[in-house]
Image (cartoon, rainbow, N blue to C red; front, side, top):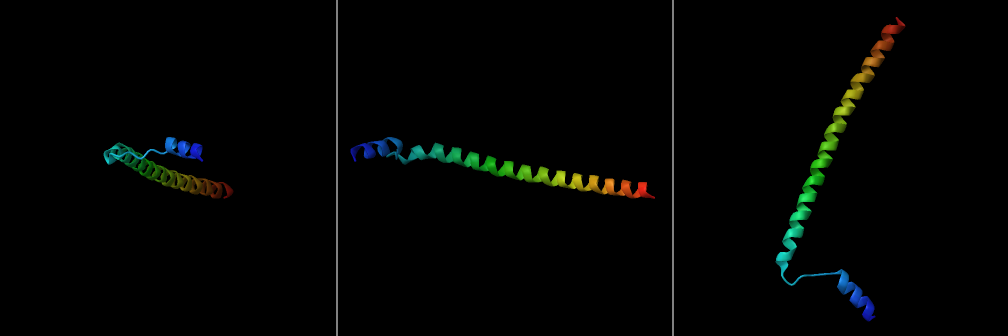
Length: 69
């Protein structure tokens, strides 16, 4: 039982001075903002590629119809 308490005490650290949480909170916010911006960038690029694929598909269909005539 003492070993479990020691292991949990070693892995978990709750500082007495709550100001030590500030750098961790700032780092967490930076990564959260970066993740949101990256997700939005991926969605924007995906929409652009979707539109390009639709234009290419329409062009191919039009060329096929012209070749059939």
